[in-house]
Image (cartoon, rainbow, N blue to C red; front, side):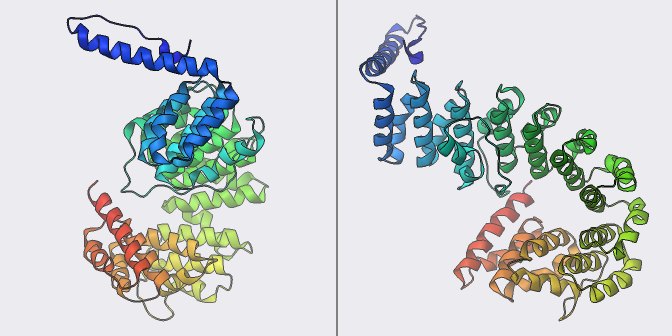
Length: 445
């Protein structure tokens, strides 16, 4: 008998209403049971595919197939609901999270995330499942999806369900998939489960949990990552190094400093120096200063960033000179960031801040420049110089600056962003509207 027919009837004084509900449920379950008995799984799979052609209104007709006794039918039903998407898909996909089949669960996880981040399914296991038809040997690619914007609100029961899966699902790929989704959906409610998952024996789950913690940005999780700085899996170790840096984990500094002194691995040293550079501690100066003139571009850039985060007015002249003399793009941008962070905030033709703004027009280096500007925009003295730039400059400059300023949530940026929403350039106006939503959401925290 189908699962939906397992009905327990309770009689009460309102027996008529209860009886009507029971009869309706029994009739529905009986109809489904007969349908399953009178058709093969292959025919029911085809029925789901045919129904899916009806778009969003067909979801309510497809949803009952999530209770089918045959796993192939449930998988096809989940796939169809994910492909259709829309608000109507959320409740059926939440139900599918409870399925015993790993593929159904993963499809549901990625489908829920895909509703809030269109295209998300292409970054998970879904595309591989389509071709492989098996969970064996599937691995996540490193093309990570972005996070939802700060103003997007995810239904709490979705985040709660994903956190529960990270902490309790039997299949490791399912737990890893849920961890990845939690990160992209900013599921800070899942931090306890994610940090506990770091103690598992599955490298993929550990890695996905680390990336999720980076995205969520809850600094309280940092100390629970430190033990992984010595992990034997290089990919996990690299992610752990990056995580303690991004979470500004002061407690990790002794381990990071020892690692820099003792490691012979070039990749590990780079990651450790980069991590130290993310943590603004005056004690890092003696570690970072020697790398300002290192032959390695990556180490030079990391040292410059770190000096910018701990430096002050006394460092401006030196850092400005290094910016002027640097020939390689990565460390030159880092020296520009460091000089501005240390107090040189003027905007003129050859100034470091103007250089960062100009680089927003570079397809190859826009992401690096934007990250520096986003961090610098948290400083009131830098925001004061950036806000007027919203009414001038190129399209790429204005849209990037709008987003960076919007993420600060500072009250003084809101009038300028409101004006940008009425810009004659439609793409600028669109990004201005997005930035304004984010600014208002952050201001209301």
